[in-house]
Image 1 (tube, rainbow, N blue to C red):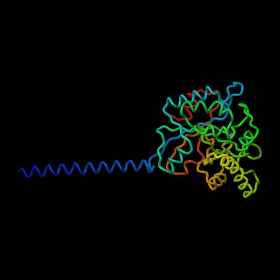
Image 2 (image 1 turned 30 degrees about the vertical axis):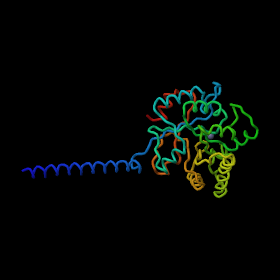
Image 3 (image 1 turned 120 degrees about the horizontal axis):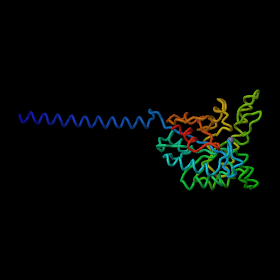
Image 4 (image 1 turned 90 degrees about the horizontal axis):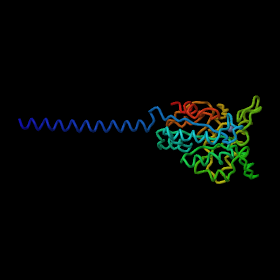
Length: 286
Ligand SMILES: [Zn+2]
């Protein structure tokens, strides 16, 4: 009788031990699944700003006031969003580093001097980060002539050095930011394929060189002028070593552990005249 009781007790202990092992194994499996990204990935809204100016007469599709930017930033923080840059995305995709629970990427296109004047302090005092995509030839021009005008100047290499605690610098072409016969960096109708390819390579490389020679980190992301991209431009940029490209299609991205998820990422343009609530409602897709 006593032996039988002991036997049953032993069986019970063994069962509990087996169950504990099974549960911990399940947990490990679960963790591996999340890490290995068999899950659905991380939602990443990307916001797109251009000029920041106080002058109400100038506000429009690509110009918003510092007050609007500040309201957007406060609303993002209130909703629990944390800013990330391209480096954070690469660390997540390639090195298994974590992303914040609610990541958002703020991008500023063209590299206007007014970003330094208005956006830089607003972001800095809130501990937020952003990506600035420069037009290399413009940054080179204003670095050369030293002109600082919020209406038309672009950031200089010196500004970029100062701003690097907040802004990560990416490539927005050297001189292909034009919308004429050629649409941004795309091949023109009838243009020879090989000639186009070397033009795109040389143009892109000039901005890379400018930043490298100034001792700034070399861009790993290409921001398409006007969002205009093609299978051909994607191939060339990938061959050049770019690990990320930004477009202008308005959609929320899903970041997984697959490196391909960082190409042709969607972004939401911030224009004047829309309330913070409306804009963030659309852009965050909540
Ligand atoms: Zn642009």
